[in-house]
Length: 342
Image (cartoon, rainbow, N blue to C red; front, top):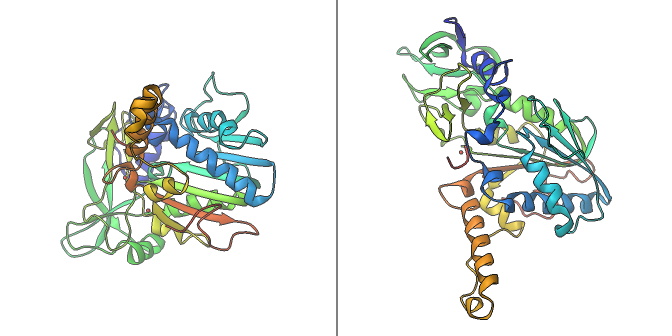
């Protein structure tokens, strides 16, 4: 790393995805933070149910599963394992893990490892905590009320104000994150909008879902959300490759990039997929103690995935794509919104 001053988007791109970037490290994301995928296998079960519903809505037994930002393939592996018990035993699934890091040596051979989503896929594209790691510019309003790009020094994370924000970035700020006055900051989500639009366009038919911690216009944090994570702890964001760099996602802006985008909470989305945190009836403890203990454990995992103030508040953005893309919330769903718990 050098002492060169660069905008946050360029600095984060190198720090996360460069040859020696954070996401190239052998331990993978799971070595530093815990997402819904790592919290419970119930999350993969829910995605498996969604894949089965998507195939049914498409009227096909041949379906694609595209895991965007796949990490080390934990989600796609869990979904394939859960499918037989969730009505997908007869599905012919083509599974893709989209990730820039090298393919894990022990990954299920049924999974195709690729750097970009396959064009023309037909099925479910699922992006769990991918958009928050798409690098983006950061802006700050100076004392005169001018929004300026924030520049950062990779060696130590020091910051300074750079050139005024102009062009498409300025237009994005006016529409989606108006300045709260001198000293306020904003993360310009235009690169994420474009990344999501490109991912959705890769589907020829089916459902695209992005899950992330998010905020909406009118509730943007006045000083932004950019932060770092290392070994399970939140740290100062320094773009030197030693930590994750993440910022909450303006999912409402992403929703506007493709027709029929709907946003709801993870709590709502998982409830529609049969994942809830209700405790089992106490009477079961007397009639079948072992079943009660298993049900209690499952309820505890479901409660974590749907908890208010935690994973349950994550946003689920859904787009139906193709002939059935009429703006609904997705196959088998009713319309309905953070890094995972650290």
